[in-house]
Image 1 (cartoon, rainbow, N blue to C red):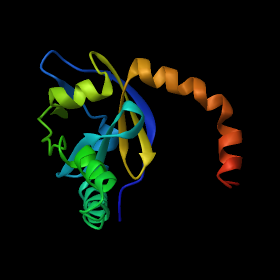
Image 2: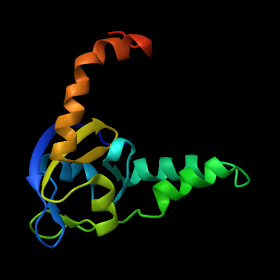
Image 3: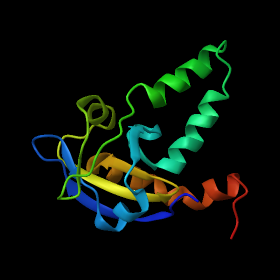
Image 4: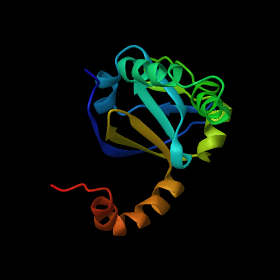
Length: 144
């Protein structure tokens, strides 16, 4: 079963492109996990089980469909299998940092089945859209 991530943490990328993964999330990620491009200008971090599930969905897409090929490239081309160092840091490759607009300050967010890594500026802008969350939930038929 995939880990269930929740919470929000602020950190900074160091000069070498390394990010501390919050201790709360490290156990759920396990020894093997994947960082890739995410929607909305963030990065996704999947534990191995979550990544395997995504790869299966991508493999099921038809090769003769141009949009399907674009989706596969989006997730797979820049994906990386980072290793945690002794300080709980991972190295994030430059193309992924560029995709997310990350230069220094970072917000790491647990969103259930995965983590999202955001430029703190982008995350703050995203927070402003949360004001209409009740309307969005209603439009999706989400009630609790």
